[in-house]
Length: 271
Image 1: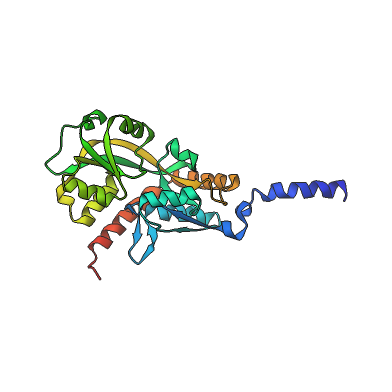
Image 2: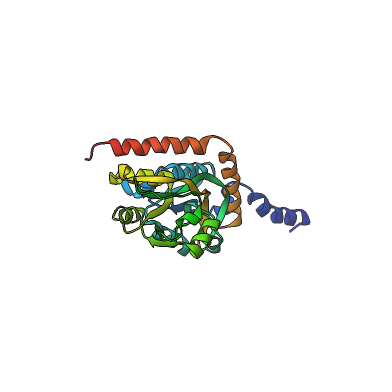
């Protein structure tokens, strides 16, 4: 082989590596799976027409990213939030469609920056039975509820672990039910998903939020470190496309659109 041909043969893989989709050209990695918290409208929730799928703002945005990269992304329901995280940690599912960043989570997932949406975690209480609250210290000495493996930001997580009495349960529905039964004094859960859940349970008039929020955290795409498709080239392409999309109005548009979508579904008569 001539020196020129040898040089071209060496350069060709490097050139191809920068073509969209080349690094994951193997068929299995052109079809990726994602999951997330199924009790998280308008960000994510189970599709009433196909309960094995998750829909919402997170799903719509990630499918847009995948489509522009020539990938197929399926956002699937695998069980409650704790189970969803287990499926991604094990590599059985490739990624989480919305994850708060913490040090512990970086051990099992690679976060794709920047975050695509932000969400506030708040203190939920029984209506008319709130308490004086202005900062985290006002939660001390009370019985709180949260979700298994849920996070409300590294700083609050660390504080709660050391200072608060928080019981973790598998689902937000269970956490709210325990609150309404007076088996806890408050629940830490995100604002919009909590409002959506309260409406679903028909308990919106029995719950309220204490201000200010305990935290406001970014939602990230997070790839399982055990996924065979988690390669540097894919992460770089995802980050580049995500940065492009979040610089514009699309994420907030999708959030507003999915809030209306979820509300229409709740207003529709039962089949």
